[in-house]
Amino acid sequence: MYKNVTGHIYDIQGYAVHDGPGIRSTIYVKGCPLRCLWCHSPESQRHEFELGYLPIKCLGTELCKNACIDACPESAVLKKEPIQALDGSGMIQKVEIDRTKCVGCLKCAGTCISKALYVSGWDTTVDEVFDRVNKDRGFFQNGGGVTISGGEPMAQYEFALNIAIRLKDSGLHVCLDTTGFAAMEQFGNILPYVDLFLYDIKHMNTVMHKNLTGVGNELILNNARFLAENKAALQIRVPVITKLSDKETNLRETAEFCVSLGEAVKLVQLLPYHATGRMKYERLGWQYKLTNVEPPEEAFMLRTLEMFQSYGLSCQLY
Image (tube, rainbow, N blue to C red; front, side, top):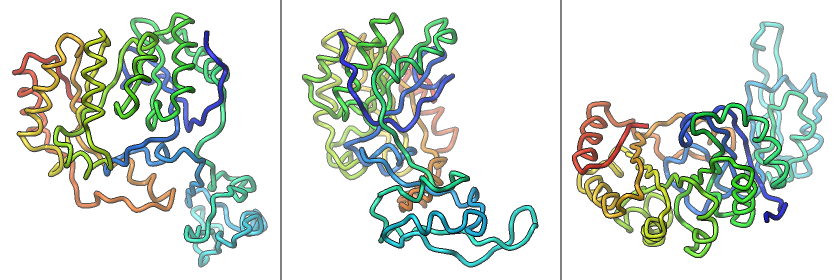
């Protein structure tokens, strides 16, 4: 029996086709213990709700009568120099956020009529999440279902566990998208309610893994072995980051590790680096760290695919 506990999420997306088999709905849980340099969802990292700002949506302080500026108790919302409005109607004065002063009270977002200032994340309950994704049940034909993602959903273990129980008890196919960085006991508890683990193997060298993500990989690899030994189904996801994780030695060790997990590994997905999440850092006032990294070439990815397949693994490019 599930408990209707409360958790923090930052999105629910319907008609997802890259988060497990079939057509799915994906629940994005807030909070992650890793800090991957290439993270394409920085809004997922912190458990706390955060202030985002999309300047293009700002209508100008004249129209809103300085509402966001007046709402800020720390004077962190400032007027910028006037610029020409996109529609050519005249000059408008947008705002900017002084992140050194912002304390995250989020009061300014509540006044923004255009939602240029917005809050990333909200409180919700297991029942509320279920009611939302259950509306999409008609799309979950031919192997679809619901994926619990993040962030790292196991960072909100009680919430993720009870969502999984609620979904599984209703007859839905459940995927858990995880970094593997959580207590082994917790994975043992959630295992009966998860049909497929989307499991990240980011680097086989623990020192390099810590440099790239902020944590070592021992717990992650041990949990993968534990899940395989206990008959879990695993879809391994391998990020291929130019100059960081794309060395042949690392990729071959990753393939060999996947082979060692045996029949538990149903599919290996190779995820070439992309920078499409870079704009999200600007919205949060963060600095993106991989500014000089380019996506791997298609020819390299195809060679890597062939290499993984040479180990007898079912493998595909993401």
